[in-house]
Length: 312
Image 1 (tube, one colour):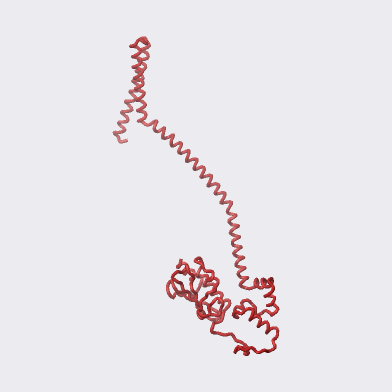
Image 2 (cartoon, rainbow, N blue to C red):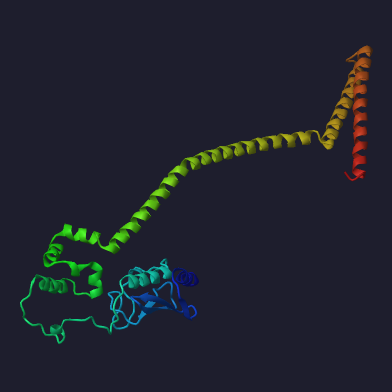
């Protein structure tokens, strides 16, 4: 994950220089005609902990600590999570400095002569002077931030309305360039989400149809499996019934049964239970059956022995 974060730094930013491998990197930006550098320090626990960004020279900006130059209040730093992209964070900081170039901390803006030593002459003031003073009281931030919000261009009356009228304040905020940019990005994102949602809905019907076909095939497969199991069991029983060894056993039983019947006929004749004609007819018939079955048995035994010798 650390390597992936460093890769995003090189993807989203130009002029990335490696100071210490996997630990420190340098990115240069153009800020109002002046080149500035942002040092990116990655601690041992990065990306589980946020990176440290230090700008050089130190800029007068509400994101930057005026003593150390560390960029502490950039949205990407304040809202940093393990899923943030290091490259996008640095890119957003660079774009902010490029679009709204702040002054260097050791530089001072030109001021009127009567304010140089902290003295303020009590001269008659017109409406514009009062508005300028009111802007300094309402927004005690840097001149760069005032330019960013456009407060210097407002009159005292407009500032008062902005402070007291919520509707005017909301309308003013909506017209700020960076708010409009965020709204446009949000609208683009919403359009993309809506497009994806519509695409998903369009694909749902096809997905449901394929799901139904899959369920039908699964049911057919189950039925065929059950049919195969039943047929396989029947085949196994038939194979056992018609196996040579089973036929041999059945023939042996049939031979024994025919032999027993002929003995029974002889026994009845000896006991006087049948006459000569009946005895001869029944005895000859049972012995004939016995002889035929015995011959079949012996022939089958010979064939099985031959197959066994042939290693079948």
